Amino acid sequence: MNQPALAWVVAGPPGAGKSTVADLLLAALEPTPALLDKDTLYGPFVAAVLASAREIRIHGCPVLLSGPFTGQIHDARRWRSWVAELGGGTVHLVWVKSDEATLRRRLTARGLIRDTAKLAEFERFSASMRLGTEPAAPHYVVDNRLTAAVPLGEQVAALAGTARA
Image (cartoon, rainbow, N blue to C red):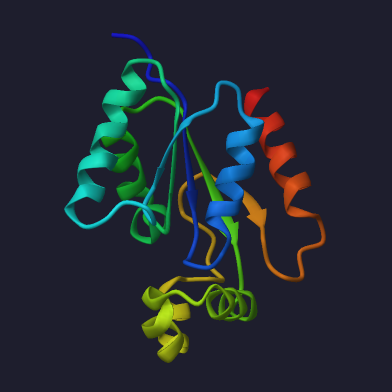
């Protein structure tokens, strides 16, 4: 059996900038991975598509998964199990670091109906996202807070170069 193609997981809370980071990574990586974004997939279809990542990778196509994946990234055992479900091999976790001020601003600015409950119960929502806790799984950090010292594009370009090396 061949080694599965590379997989990337871009994780972080809603409003952290996962889609932006994923777009920058897609532009920087060769070959360009297939994007599987939880925000554009719905209901039971999400589980089916994420499960299909293993099949996609075994046939040589790298994938980039984008979503909160909070449970998987904050539990090392669950992460290892999930990596196995994705087909094993190399799976790079990119954690999009954020904070409460950034999330509140971005969720408000994007104005999506699905964010209404998050904003109404913002303290509860932000606590559930474990903003100040880095993932238990091995990961790269992309700082996408409003106060980030290095521009996002530079961080992602450096990350893509590091991961290729």
